Length: 103
Image (cartoon, rainbow, N blue to C red):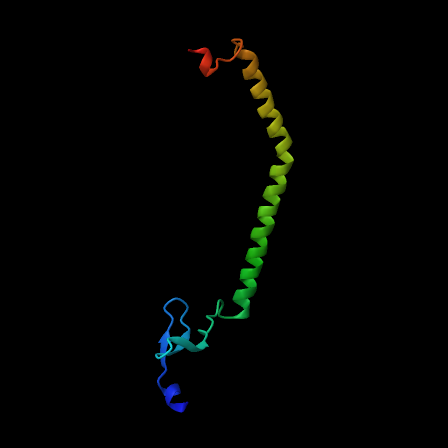
């Protein structure tokens, strides 16, 4: 059994950087060692600053959506009035033509 263990070879995954031990006889993965995680931030102060910035962006987006919702009723009313005005200006030409009416 020890001889088979020595026949394994290691391969680095090109996608995630993990180390894979592969048995050449069965072509199966014997073990998997995940790649070390990269640090997103160098120190806690930078991470805290990023969290505050993210919170400010969330708050700004929320405020914008609240303002858009407040103005939504007025916008819909204006659109309706404009469509009503256009409908009154264009004369109704009777029944709409159907394809088989043209034959």
